[in-house]
Amino acid sequence: MRFSPIVIASALTLLTACPPPGSSGGGPSGGTNPSGQHRRGALAPPSCGAIDVNPVGRKIHAFLLASYELDKASFELEESVYAACRDMAIALDVPVVGDTATLCNAVSLELDANLEVSVSQEQRLVTRTAPPVCTTTVDFAAEVAATCEARAEVDIDARCDGYCTGTCAGVCEGQCATVNANGSCAGACNGQCRGRCTGQCRGSVSVDADAECKAAAEIRADVRTECTEAKVVVVTENVTVVDSTKFDKATRAIEIGMPNILRAGAKATIVAKSLVHWAKTAGELAVSGGKVIAAVGERSVCVGLELAAAVAASTHISARINVSIEVSAKLSASAGTN
Picture 1 (cartoon, rainbow, N blue to C red):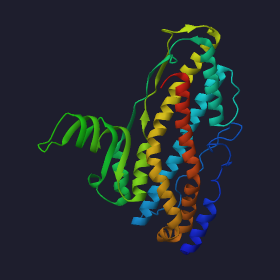
Picture 2 (cartoon, one colour):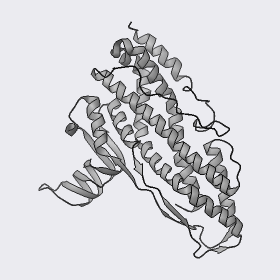
Picture 3 (cartoon, rainbow, N blue to C red):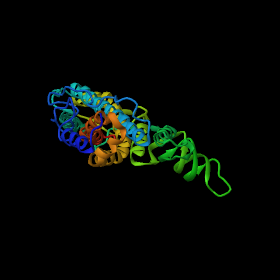
Picture 4 (cartoon, rainbow, N blue to C red):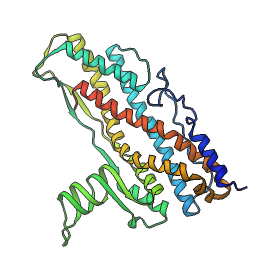
């Protein structure tokens, strides 16, 4: 049975007006309810069957798969931030109540208060930090885009928006291990690679492809970014401790919570870059989705419902990513890890 674009568009409109399944719609992030109990991400893996049999179907399938992975990753990021704030709250004797933003804000305020009364010093910073190192695989983004557009992987323009630790084919803003006769880089780039980076990228990935394929490739690569754990140590050099009990509480809270807070914040910052184009593409599909989805034939209603769910989840996804970044920045300032 085929449905008209008008019917499909109506389904999109109804679903995008409501919160995604499992969402309370409450709380600043949508990732936790007011009692602090976490819920699962709203989206399920694409389950409409083989829709990737034509160009339109391939693009929609790629976008839906990326949307599911993004929703899952955003939930996991916020969940790790919430867990770290919970551990810090326990160390500081702060009640574990509220959603992620509320709980982490309470931790930040208590940390500020503890360090203010427990330490006498000229400079506020009392921590030493080795920040997380995050790497993203550019080749994977190229593979996703190539599959989505049915092109050869070598024909995909996938770049590292950061530092290329693999082989840079293009302009290296830094030191290049091997230089071509024309002056372009053809080896490892100790700096920023303005071209194809084969290997690991310390940053986000940028892909030149059709909107849905670009969103799918960048999101799926960035959510697979791996970040090392930050090293955070509270030091007492040039510091006079006037209240050892409060100082010990603050020290314990910083050392058990900040490594995961910083790692989540670093990864969320990378994902946030590809999130911008994904959200824009989701909005465009919501507007023109009826005509596009009709191209998948008898599975159009199923695909329409899945697309609508992805669009509806976009607000919560963005909120989870943003709260992960904001909490990392706020607690970094409180703990002196900036």
